[in-house]
Length: 205
Image (cartoon, rainbow, N blue to C red; front, side, top):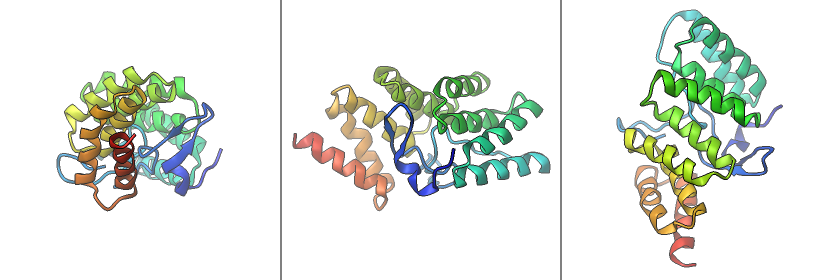
């Protein structure tokens, strides 16, 4: 299954939903509390270092994701977690590669494993939020995205997920705050354009 990297922002999964800003290349820059921009796939992994063999596996996985070769990325991440069952980043990457294949239940398991290893993983929480959003379980999605925002208040993926989930619940007024935060964090981005459009729609129904 292949999709060009340019389609990640509006990737349509078999469930028929459009998962928005968090579906972009995991190796690219979402705003974090440290001021770095990291625009990432659901539960985007951040390799924190290790042996050269692990670095090679992460590089292969990242390249495969960027090419839209999600099965190849899955294979690399499975090798990573087989070698080190405690590798949080590996499970998040595995969840992302499964999610982008539309294998939502399996992705949920991978993200849940990552969260079990690292309970304050914003990336794992975002991944689980995306799982529930894809199932139209918006209340659960809100809970996960909100938890991610509490950990990383400047993570635009968590903020966007929270906003669109709240909006799906008919809570547009509550969605305005995370949308405004996105405008402040990434004012010149395509995500900011979407946030502004949603704010206008909420304020002028």
